[in-house]
Length: 136
Image (tube, helix red, strand yellow):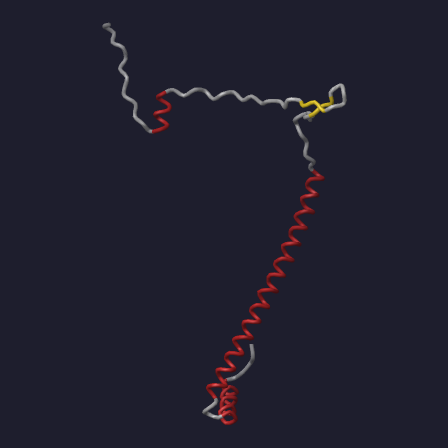
């Protein structure tokens, strides 16, 4: 980040030792360290807030693009219903709404399973059945 050579850093350390003195130098270094830590914390919060704002702006832009694309697709390919539109209410002769029954869809019942098919699906062995004897 900063282009500080080791010789420049050594010069700053010697000047600090002479100006501040060996007795107060640890206190000064601790103070500088705390100040740098606070500055980094503030910069981290600023960066996180900025990243959040950028992310929200990108999401908003993407949502607008998706909405426009969805609208274009819906214009090009309108939804066509194959079911006839049936009203759920009708007016009786006196102008009052009369409820009508909605159509009921009937599905055929599934075929019944035999005991052997149920046992095979559950993994239960069935006892072997012996055919009727020819002598009886």
